[in-house]
Length: 272
Image 1: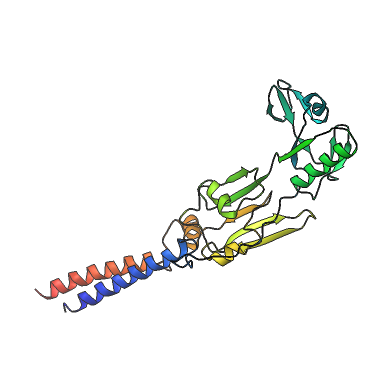
Image 2 (image 1 turned 60 degrees about the vertical axis):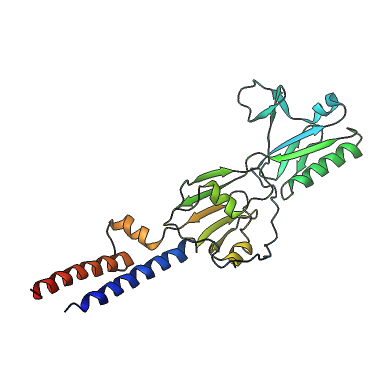
């Protein structure tokens, strides 16, 4: 009867190996990348363009600071209720893009900025100041004030995160959320994107596949993107019932272990 024991041990080992291999494939990022150096083509980045509701910091400078100040929206630093940041001894406020895509700029009046990149806005204002002989040697710097994205679901630190770069990748965004939990699905990241025309687009990304990641339209994050990490099936079942499922490898490993112990006991009794 002792010949049953090695068979059960082999079955147990195989189940344990299959379970660990399956888990490894589910949690490793970009697992199809060769060991040697490889070059990949990345989907071209989509430039951040200004939308209604965005906030912009627009700073105008020149060789004569006193003249440039007339084109800067500034208030005393101790002014109560202003949203902005300190620039020397003054607080420079943000322009908020209205529902028509316009900002009200000093001297120049209403300027349409929706759909433009920050560099295009800077060039447009600079050209007007120079061409209209309002400010010689004008230097215009435009930066974003409230760009953000959200990460929700099975990550370590879900929340809304701000960024001020022209380009930020999906991996950057997930790292800001302190990465996925071990139970988060890496093969089915959902990104929702509200376009400027009011349509909502959804995209799926497999972080385990390098090509799927780099060629995705959401490899570069846009303002107001929502990144959702779905928990795996085991996590969902555990959250719902708090019990192991018969479909999980851990259940079968436990069952085989129990049967092995019972068999060993029976064999020991029968061999007496």
